Image 1 (tube, rainbow, N blue to C red):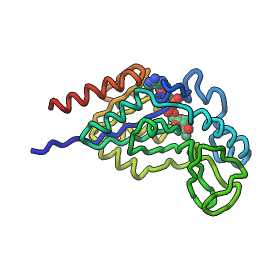
Image 2 (tube, rainbow, N blue to C red; image 1 turned 135 degrees about the vertical axis):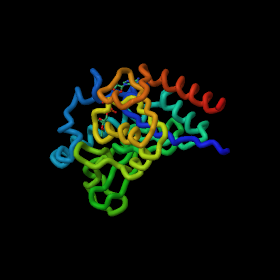
Image 3 (spheres, rainbow, N blue to C red; image 1 turned 120 degrees about the horizontal axis):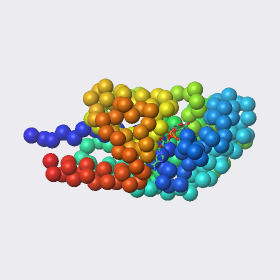
Image 4 (cartoon, helix red, strand yellow; image 1 turned 120 degrees about the vertical axis):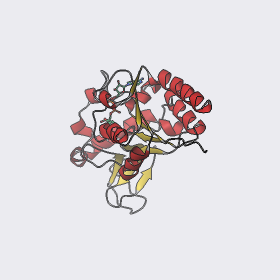
Length: 239
Ligand code: OAD
């Protein structure tokens, strides 16, 4: 009889990129300790002071372009290559370290730092260069309407129809490096679990969401995730 390999959905957050030298949001040196959400991550802030918001994300972009993936990102790529079933990545991260690690099937639900979206026509511009209030949309040619393609607080997440299907169909749900306080991503584990998935949490510490996980793997993801993937793949091979 043909063996069935359950789909795997992996939710990643800022913690997976911490060992690449990127700050998380809520740690002691977290981004939200140094600046206010209300100044840089709401649509009101963008309309009030677009120059300031563009500068903030241009600066972030200049940092993120230099970042390189760490063993946790590479472990996911290995899992995608060697596991016979589907492995999908749902990431809250706006960095592109999963792409740099060679992963596929990546859904950036909070947007991507290397993109801007035209508020006039919806066109997505891919660019590692600065985007400013002068930038002209290459599609509708309107100036001054490009917004960083970052999902601000109060905006709808991206790819949610697809993500909902992935969560309902996965047999294994793995969360890596997210505090589980930002909704709706914080509720993904519940959707997966209610639909029968086995659930794993990789984090430095137990999170407020820990009740919904079958297993907690505590420690730095750059160490714990490669070990888990190695053991998981061996178990698959040996039946
Ligand atoms: P947080 O900063 O809230 O949480 C990071 C989590 O990673 C914490 O639970 C840490 O314990 C854990 N962590 C840190 N280093 C780790 C490591 N080496 N290995 C494993 N775990 C580690 O970041 P997120 O949960 O990603 O939204 O935050 C969610 C969203 O809030 C972000 O996407 C961002 C922010 O507002 C947008 O930018 C739209």
